[in-house]
Length: 199
Ligand code: FES
Image 1: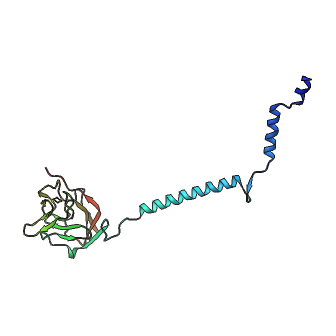
Image 2: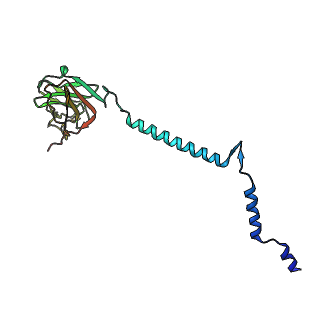
Image 3: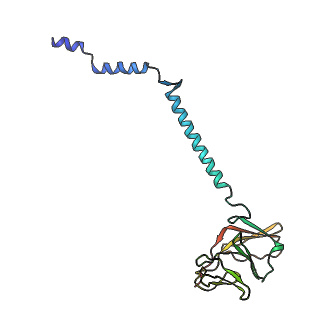
């Protein structure tokens, strides 16, 4: 009897093979006419398209200028005819937050913000210097520290003197740029140059 029972029971391997055959024979599941494989392709394609759109958007965002001309953070253009004569009192541009100072060594644009705690200083004509009303720091017309709690000279903005077809950009220290023959001056308020610290 025992021999008969073993002969009637199919081997396990044979049962698995039969199940695999049955599975292979079953058509791929479809949902509303889209196979599972097609659905995964669509998801993959949509993900790639989204990634490309995000990357393109980020590139455009960084490539476009953040500030427009004539806006703080952007470039201000000053005609040579409106440049203060050399040695005359500096002129404030309240929108650009800079003082345009024409010294005997050239022109420079000084940030209107005090290097101590950020107050707005003023030009005091009778004393021929900048004076901060908050804690009394004082600076020369070229931004050099004179006295008071400010730790450094006034900050400067990058400046370009355009003279016909040539243009001269201020150096890394923001030193005055000679304005002889200038047709216009460009002040880049998006590029601040930190004033040198004093002893
Ligand atoms: Fe100008 Fe303090 S903020 S001296």
